[in-house]
Length: 628
Ligand code: DMJ
Image (cartoon, rainbow, N blue to C red; front, side, top):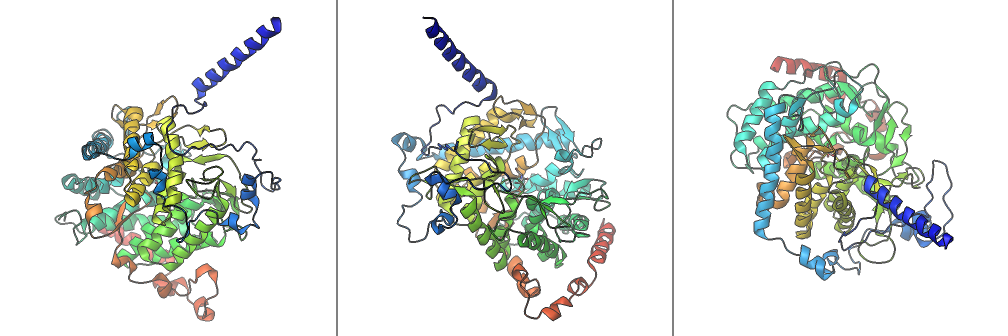
């Protein structure tokens, strides 16, 4: 009798403990989740490998799939060839259960209108409050209803200082969203405010990457849209506009150029002071995305103003990173030393530190038509599919776990950890652009499954434990971005439902007194007093566009692409007129010796640009000062 009591007691204790863990940390299983794909990763047997460890013994089919490099099938496991006998990716939706069909197979027009209105209202609640309580500061603290600028008391607070430069960041980042929403009056007012009040002559040390994508990218996007003679948004010409946004963009770019000096690899320093250049105590380490995602903005700027300096330094950085990829796997790491070219971070993944590097290879090709950009993109995409993608070959059929992209050691392809991050949720959108819709559907579904569970995406999610590793959610756009691009590619109403779900959970979980706040903890929904500028430039924009079928962006004859910060730029003949390879044949792909190597070697920077690099931008700064 007594032993029975002990057993029952132990069982009760165990149940209580499980409940407590679940309630406190939200680590329990996802209940009531209803989705046609089941993500049942059961990878307990995976041995986590440290650098230099041997691959584990092949014990099952899944592991074989992971480690058998001699099997060519395993290497090219996922791309569906044109003549594949597999069913269309749409079968993913068509073969769902009845309940799934009932729920997702249509989306009434009236609901679309309602959701578009909700997305618009969401943008204005954030934007109007920023203008009311925070402008001209960089960001809105949506709980305290006040502005936020750089953390001058704590220069090492790079979470804030990398992004905030004392240059009205949120206003600038939001410019083209105003146009997308059709608000020409406010767009004009905002442009004038930027012209009249913003200066980059600031003692701010910012990250080159962040200043580039959020500020430079937005300025050139707004400039191009404002002066587009095809008038995609109607006649929005601004009286007396004299290319001031372009001048501002140019001024900023010139201030970023010192990052590309005194680096033996050509890979830029991560940060510059806008007044004084690279700080004397600057570190020599940078992440791949930070150094290698400047090409879209710098390339457009160069082609707009006819000065190849910017594109040249951005291309040199990409090429330098590219040449450091592993010979074995074709992968790059996530952190590199800009002087030695040594990889400090050997992790290769799709998320933080690497995401936009891939994105800009493809987008640069789309924008500028440079074949070399596409060659690099397809090679690295192939490596990603071979080494990062795990699970079954096909998204929606066959045996084994559904596919997932994991973080691996760049040199041997072995798994380094069991988390994926929320930044990686952009990748399905990139896969759509690359025409790999089936893989895009599958990866997106995985992320949506996580969103369904928490009403947000935790910054890191542990796929082995099926629980968040890092719990905050700063209103990031990546899942919405992929949802929008997948909807454009498939027109499947499922993605409208996803968008509606995301909108509703943002309203429910992140709305506060004066805007939308970062979730500190996706489980208990506690908040941090910060609204990042990408919430207005990306999250709200993609949500609005998802439900606005008749938006000029969708109806115009011109084609558009989004920068990594969601800024709209047309795919314009102007940017594709001259091929970089033709202009600079000595910048041969992959560092192959060009045919006329002796001539090329004798072409110094001076001849390329007429002046030494340094003089060029010093002159440009003088010029800009003269302008202001
Ligand atoms: C944005 O600034 C950009 O989308 C960037 O490429 C990645 N991080 C944020 C949003 O999460």
